[in-house]
Image (cartoon, rainbow, N blue to C red):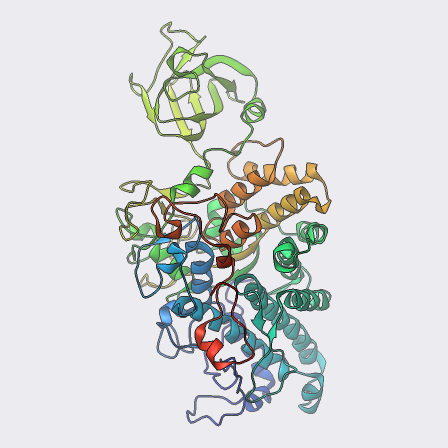
Length: 619
């Protein structure tokens, strides 16, 4: 399916999608001739799919005209207000995977773990979730069987609308999933609530879990089969993936583990026809809509979904320093987002060295020697293994800062060589070393998923506001696999879709749920991990796994994709405890922070407006 076959309605449906916890929607007479009333809109059968497109677009755009000028929500600069941008900030900048160099308003609170109920970014995230839920409720309220019958909707259109309704219920479940994860107890409204002014009740976190589960199970059989829907629309595999995520985190949300259910629904996805992307980088390029490994994306188009959020933000904000914006398909970098040494260091381990080297082939008499190797210059050397090519040898080796050379028979017998006669300087890390002992050409590679820009960048962060402190991330780019830039010739807005759900995540969920006692097969879990590593340019093998490995492997595979805060909370490492990272708690070395921060606060604006809301503990 072509990427842009599902068009987005950019009309102003303000009366359809009203935002406030004191709901008062669908009862305002518009003064602007461009604003469409709900009953008028739904009297036209041609609009149903357009409105569905607008609801999907609620994850991608920030307002009614793009990129600015008529925002969906107020109280914050429209560029900051976009759904994915706010979700990403909350999920990533609060963790060891990202820092952002800007000091706009209360944005530094995320690094410092000192946000409160007045934080405008927390408020914008909360409001954006409510806006999306309200949009879904409005669609469902206007498409009841009775209203459709009264409008004379029947035949194929009626069948199509039933599918649309299931997709809208999925989108609402997705936003309620974000709500349960980020805020816990949340104001709860469905299409069955009255239209007009009222104060929504706050639903208990466990009850919200039950609602999300029941919704996803209810639509499981009415969504289109996996990969049968138009691109960027939800299918059964999207619902199964969301169920797997819900079950994986059930112990956090309800106090009761549901790991066997996570295994069950992960298996459904794994067997549904999606496949791993063979080249990791391709998942994050402007033509990533061609990847079979993406289950549910948030779709972006440089001409049709213009906003200063989404992947426009992710790509522009990650470019600065000595980086060339043209290589990223953009007209300039914003010099904001980098990562911490904690993420970089996860790539320095994670494989079984012996098994990985034996998988290459037989041991040879050649080896790697030097101050960077485990046995330094005296040996015995790290053994190189025979590949399928006679003179080409390889080995996986963990090195420290220092130097290396290659030699034969653990001896200085004239066979040794390095870099044009000199020793080879290396930095600490896990490497796959490839060397041709005939031509003396060699290559030192790290995990190809470690997409770091290091030139002119310092590993450690002395100052968050200085872009060259901290490695930059080159993961997302607005160029296709051939290096061509996206459709917006100005270089402002991007075509790169955001892979909200993808198969590799499901592999890792299956493995984790298996380790947590959810059943399934440990052998399959290990096999799925090795598939990820085989896909990652055959970068090593694992023969056993544990939960610490899974947490680190999720970082290596999924960094900057909006998972890390949820993962750290599930593993008990986001707050409290001993795990710290650079600038956690606003301290360069990092400090432990209180456990109540595992939930964000209900914004003060909503708490003051709605007497039915109770603030989360600690705020």
